[in-house]
Length: 289
Length: 324
Image (cartoon, rainbow over all chains, first blue to last red; front, side, top):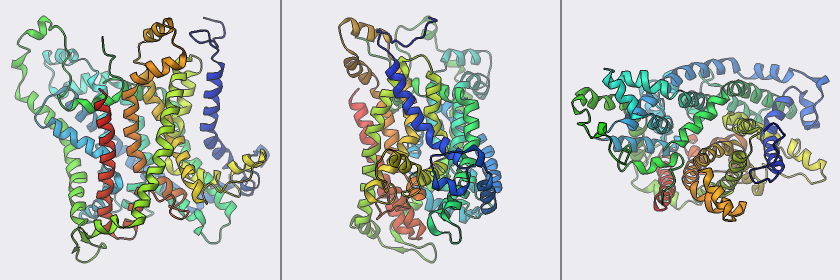
């Protein structure tokens, strides 16, 4: 069909559907677009005329102020270190465990999978007190280990990868076995290549979760030297909601939006580059039973 | 009558009883053979244990140990230093008699009501529309997932500025169409809906994807047959789509219920639990104990919250199973 396709299967116009989806899309994207644009406005303008945008008054003053006030650089560095280490651990060990759950029958399987489900259901903050004490005991407070290890083999990732791996045909695994492939070799050379879309989805989800994590880093790495980007931002937001003496509301608002923009952009760019993998990964993960 | 293929990730909740599914149906010659029992070496037996070992180690060290520690702590009065004093069920009695504890649970329950039903209906509508259109489909899919990917703290900050009573863009829009400004984040009546909106905005795209993946398993032939029988679009939605999506929907409900009862960052950053504790969610209430170093009470609060969250999610899992 080369003609403009605005009619549905049964000849109904699809224009209404598009209108609805378009309005929704605008509503979803507006806050992000607004924040990014506003962060380049003079601080006074943001509160005087929140809806307007004049390219002539484009300024980086909010960013300069924000970089001056909070350690964004070290925030990015810490987040980067945690992202690499924790991400690598999750991306390797979660599919490995998921493979065991999806393709093997072993004693204690249900019990251990129950542990996965339990971990899923436990609110993070429930474990915060003892985890913090555990870190103190180990001398890990304000260290990278503390940020990286707890939750490094993510239960949701296991839960989700199990669905993906279950869809890999058993015949493929048996064929590899007949060819003399070891059990780990099957995982490494057969399963992982077969689930690449799901793996890509997991990758984006993992990056996202680690990058966006707040609760644990706030308590485990409260020193400004170890603060991750999100902790830095949270501190800024806390200062802003009224307590900071000596800075006026407009300046603070400008810095707040600048900080939000700095935090949003890396993920936004990454997501736009990888969106196909991410969406296909989620679809793959939730379709197969 | 053939049963439709199970749609969606929710299948997993049933599988525990019997392990991975073995394909039913006539056995092929290959499967009827000794099934390669000789290749069931000790390596193959031990492999799964080795594969789950890292998870089990992390789980024992950073979930089970802390869990038991919390349990013990919940029966003591301890403020982080000195000796802990055993108080039996004192912390639990204190919390259960404390109106602030109940109101924190109540606030979470209200958020649940404001979020989950709305999200479910909206997701089904959007997913069905996305499934019928061809043009721009991937554009919409990307746009809907953008909020889900964005860092919550940054979004929460944007919410503070956007919904400011005096200088916010939302009230500016209202003013432009002649409506009076609303105290979004500073009145108890509006603070909860404003936080609910943040949560909806952030997560609905993800639920849409879950529903969409369920929809893609529905046989198009079913709709054609229904059309021939004279069923209208609404009728088709109600009689075909919704029943077939049941698993995806229940999966979403369980997932979002867990998420809503754990809401912490949103009120912590945006409203700090105010005004008048109207946005002190169960998660934030618990965090406040930790913040005050009232660790015994915090631990007891943790357990009460775990019980509530588990009870609610098991209820949904039950519902899911009962419907099968």
